[in-house]
Image 1: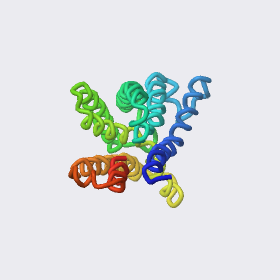
Image 2 (image 1 turned 90 degrees about the vertical axis):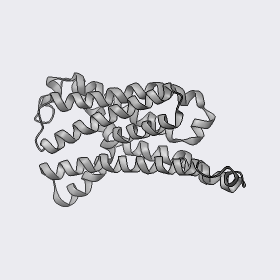
Image 3 (image 1 turned 180 degrees about the vertical axis):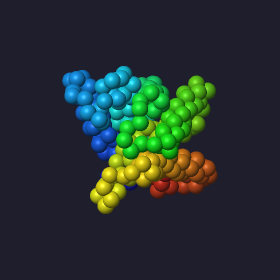
Image 4 (image 1 turned 30 degrees about the vertical axis):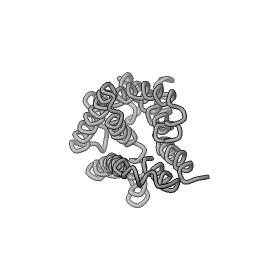
Length: 232
């Protein structure tokens, strides 16, 4: 298998793996709400007002998993119809995920361990994801596909924050136990920050590849393969 073919599937596979843990626990939350589970300290706010969390989970789970396939250059090239159809679904799902995230932040009481830093971080992140999806849609309406893709990458990166937060929290849980208010805020922010940094690196790399002179790109199959890998 060529480097380009491997990249076509390794990137979506990695993103799906990153989505699995929050998707699994989110699905358990939906089952808990559907079955009218006993009220506990951790689920009381969700059972008292289930609409925002149900809408959020129903949107963010497919947004994370289906969105991963948009990072396959092979799918984008060979199945343009699927890419467009998926995009028409992903943009509304991303908006619902972002807006319900803001809704939950504003409406739900703070759970134990949360504080003002995490509260305002969630507000900033929710607004940023909403803005990214809207700017992506506006760019698409202008047929500015490059800008559209860049904003969707940013929106997806923020939406996938819960997956990276599993990784930022895990070492702390193993070594230190349950984090307090400040460590929890830092670990949560780190999950979003890492994703945003990776998104900006991907966007920078794509722009760099697009600046490669035509003569260099046309020099041979090897150069073309490097360009194909670079825009993943």
